[in-house]
Length: 170
Image 1 (cartoon, rainbow, N blue to C red):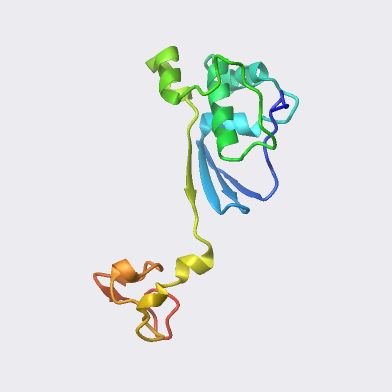
Image 2: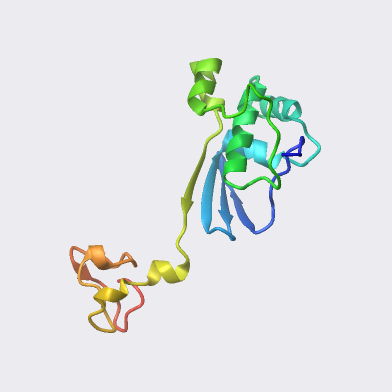
């Protein structure tokens, strides 16, 4: 872990900014990440020239309240965990492995709005999302006979509701 100034990853990502959150789709891992406002502000401002202190000051200015460096460290930890930083970062010992719960206890309940949160899901590829379980194929038009057999999401109450010729739901 040699990098002291964090750099946000930008390659192979699709980014959609919304008013209070940022959605990031990782083309390499087929993972979708939702960054709350605090995590998104940290990620957007990781340009390799800002220190953690600089990021905390910038966050405080954007959010209209002082933001401790511990909040930035927690955001960076999550960004690294979800592979949204270009390189691993070095953390000071007191911050290494800090959990959101521990940070909340340290900062107090009033800081809850500034705690960075990233949620993530693995997104199926289009082929996986549209396919049915091959072991249950009954015919070409509607191969699934129950919702538990269907990977396409077209089964309703045990009936596969597809358009004639298959491939898409009604």
